[in-house]
Length: 203
Length: 198
Image 1 (cartoon, rainbow over the protein chains, first blue to last red):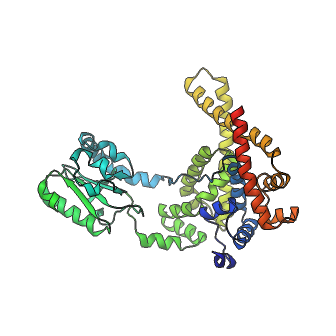
Image 2 (cartoon, rainbow over the protein chains, first blue to last red):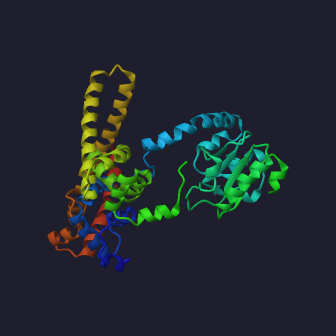
Image 3 (cartoon, rainbow over the protein chains, first blue to last red):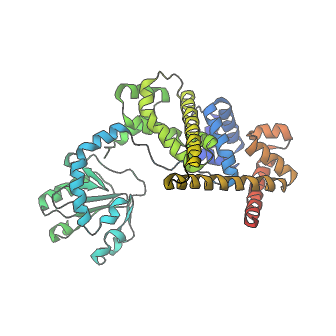
């Protein structure tokens, strides 16, 4: 850590470095670097001022919740999918796993609770990706509609992702297999599929 | 669903703020605002905290600020992003405070309106807790050992740096860090006792 702070570093400190500083941790050269930065950066100086009293009152380093703002152009892009999502939503509401689709992280034991210990090894795995292929071959990742062309290029970046779950309601085995192989190509973690169709389970 | 390319994200992460702003002017790519968010969200949160005094409100304000960036980055010539961004944060917080004070005075005059009454009550709860904490802090700080009291006051309340405190008190840096940490811990314990008694 020391060498980093001896070198000239003009970037603003990271959240971790803010926390170190407020807790009086870190080497003397780190503190010297941080305070030199504060002298030259009004933005960080005001931020530290904001954190200090709050830190003293709560003894916590509160951080902004990790939510990114939604912009209008993203919303506009989503609108064309709204109709498809509405159809998918109706299907989801009729499925036994509907309540889990609104979470970002899923546990196998929740998703497959209705399947009588479908796979015991899987029970405590968690995933950031829960794919769903509906009866009418619509595809969603978590609760968002995905076009078939986008499957290969779509993934959720999450270092805690242990497995990928795919719930299949589709009757078309060919379509489903094509989708699953695309998902597999794009992931280094195991892809687990649940389907009521025996042929798909074997895959 | 946004299609994520790791390579593109890495490219953005390697660019300077000024280059990101210029790139955004060319392609309006929201991912660029995402990169600025990664770099500055914890800093702008601190700025919002300074003005809004409440972590939840500061968080909402922060998200509003980043939402306005999509328009603002395209509108203005920005030579120094950090200074410009600080001004945006300050202005947004001050505007929000003005708006809140107007809403609060309107709420006081319309207490029969259930919705406004409930919002007002929740705001009052927030500020009451904060008031209680500050009162407890004032009391607790007087109970600290003189060295701890001096260092805690200088660092947290007068916003002095560790090295400035070394200059003022003539303690060495290790002692200053230790007085602040121990003082902070003792302060927490004493504040909890005072708040329990109340």
